[in-house]
Length: 575
Image 1 (cartoon, rainbow, N blue to C red):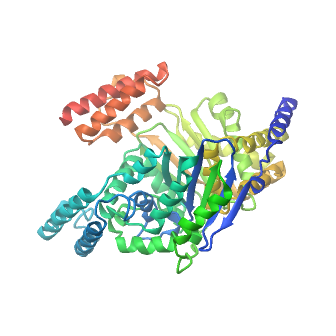
Image 2 (cartoon, rainbow, N blue to C red):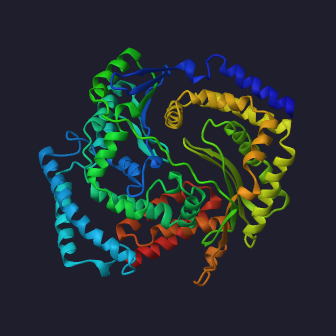
Image 3 (cartoon, rainbow, N blue to C red):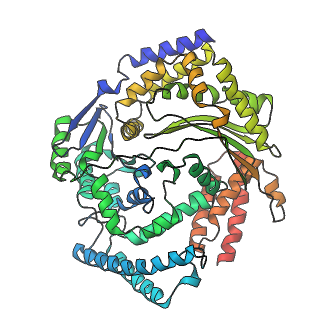
């Protein structure tokens, strides 16, 4: 087997020899006069260009009171500019000023509501018992202004312009360390991309700012509150990262999202969306000299920022003992054990990345032990999650029905202890490195995937770490993996998340009980997201399920049929 793996590595190396797998050899970076950087990678013959940019700001750059503001910007950046997305820019600006004034009055009232909540006179500032007639009047005026603003808008014009030009895949994501925007454009529409992206950066309007926060609340409900373990996972993360900005969710705390003002948003934008804090990237078939000229012409018009973004200063407090968080959830029993480790490119980062590969997958140690040998789990995994400002390492197991999460935790810790005591084998190390060699070549095949990697690595440190992080792993030894495990993965410093299935207060549905535990959890999660939806939304969801039924494998169709039945019943009740 080792000979076969070695031959695979040689074949991959031979295939890659015609084209360097090092980004430093194939990418070119230029810096504009205002400090913005442009990274270019040529892919001759490609009909489309993958293009995007990363703002070096994420939830770690926030502070209590404005958590979630980085993610909110991800929404706001698709609203256009004074020239895109509105029929009358002057009226739009006037309405926005009126909304700001009105929202300031409402905020003064909410200040009193917060005091009442702190005194136990209400559960939230939206509690109906706290609302006054004055607030009701302000809210009614506010909704009228929002209606007027929307009537003046050209909805989704930013997306429409791109779509009509043949572009696709426009999207964005925000995490703890960065915010990334990306799209595919036909290669003869590259200038359009330069104009569109520079337009929304040069002249942000924050249109629908206050109503857009309602969209974020809905996103939070779907991703956190309505999922089987979302709320509990959020609690665990806040305990794990005590004293560190990774401790609050990327989407933000609900009370902060509701209180962020447009004035705060503008100040945050000016600081973190300044040219020197942004890196552009394009991958495809284009003329580099022309691309640089367009970059200077369009993005160069944005003035440099007045101030440099402040450092992220707060370090996580030391974990002084074993942390165990227990909760009952509407999902199969599970155990996750996490240790705080090192930030991206830290001294042991490469060794921990290797260890996560050794433990993961169907040929990994965890699957062999918990799924095949002990037969107590249905799903297992490990991950080294190194961020810009800190990192963690986790092992996970989802148990079979009736299996105690304490048993899962004990076996996970046993497998980690074996690495600490005995290390990993040369065969395991060689297998990981062979996979790495193949990954280095595959990352060059898809220009869009390559773009996302360039932006992601630049958001963490610098796009060149695409090379250095691979190179660090390539030279990792088995002794270094064992040493890293011994340094970080100590049982007395573990943080464990143990979930037990919640006992249902409702009579068991025999049709649902016929599915395995994992499928039941997925069905309940999807149906939970449909609860409380309008008839129109339920109808759309039903249509999507019916379309999905023809696309999934035959073995998955019974689960789709069950959800169709349940959503149909919800729809009848909602009419």
